[in-house]
Length: 94
Image (cartoon, rainbow, N blue to C red; front, side, top):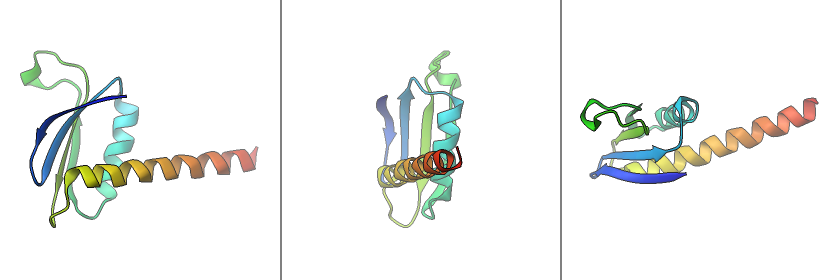
């Protein structure tokens, strides 16, 4: 996975996540929106200003002094934990 920060401030982060599609981006966005200090999380796979760019750009806005990168890390850990839990439940049911 290749990441590239396109915009960054104290309470907002835009990051390009190369090689991913709606499936991964929706899961990550959902995990971010569950974070209590994230006020907005969205992604765009074809921003107008890009002239047809197709790599998704994730945008995160935070509040309460929480850094967006910290919220992204928390969300990624949450996604991993849920995936492991699902795998374990699936294997136990098989």
